Length: 307
Image (cartoon, rainbow, N blue to C red; front, top):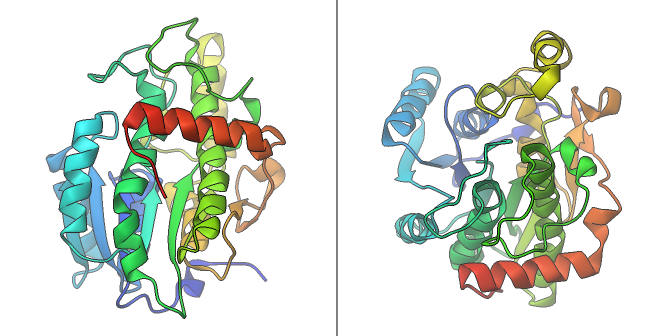
C-alpha cells in the first residue's frame, strides 16, 4: 500500500525538532506537514531571519501551528551545545529530525578546526542527538518510543570509504567524494545508534531516510558539478522531484510503524523519486567495524560519550 501524508494521522501532543527548516528545502516541508497534522514543531536553523521566514510560511498555511525557534549552527560545536540546552528547556521531545546539511562545499575548516561538511552533516548531528537523548527518553511511553530520523542520501553508495580519518587533518580534499562520505556517515551513525539504544534498553529508536533527487536550495547552494554543470542544470529538474515530495521518506520514517534501523527512500526508478518505501543501503553502511570506529571518533571529536 502506497504511503502518503494522509497516513500521518493526528500528531497532536507530539513535539518534533526539525533541523534545517529553511523555505525551499525538505526540512521546511517536513516541518510544515508535521505542524499541519497537529505536532508542535521546533524549528532549528542557522539564521534567525530564515527561521522567521519559515515560521511565517508555515503559519500562512497552518495558522494554528505551534512553532518554536532555536538558532543552531551544526558546524559549530559550541552552538550545538547552546541550542541543545535551549531545546531541552522546551520539554520532552518525541521526534528529532536531523535534516540540515551542506553539499559539496569548497574546503573550509570550522572554528573547531574541523572539515566543514563532516562537521555539519555528521559531527554536529551526532552531538545534538546525544545532548537531546534525555529529552527523547522523557517523551517515550510504554506504548510509543521516541525516534531519531537522520536524513542521508542516495549518494552514500558512491562513498569510496568511511570517513574514519582525523577530521582536523587536511588530506587530499575532493568536495563530492567528501559529501558522499558524510552521507555514508549518516547511515553508519544511525545503525550504530539504534544498536546502542537497544543494548542500553532505552525507549528510543533510530531510523534514516533519503529524499531521492530533489530540486532544492541545497542543490542550488551546493558545489559545482564541474564540467558536467551545464548538462546537470538541464537534466536535474527533469529527473528530480519537488521538496514537498522529497520530504515524504523523512515523514514516513518519523511516523510510520517501523522498527529502528529502518531506511526509507523513494520507490521510483533507482530510488530517485516516487512514493516512499523501505529501501536498502550499501554493504559499507552495514560494516559494524566502521560503525564502531566512526562512533568512537565522533565521541573523541565532540567530547560526548553516549548512550
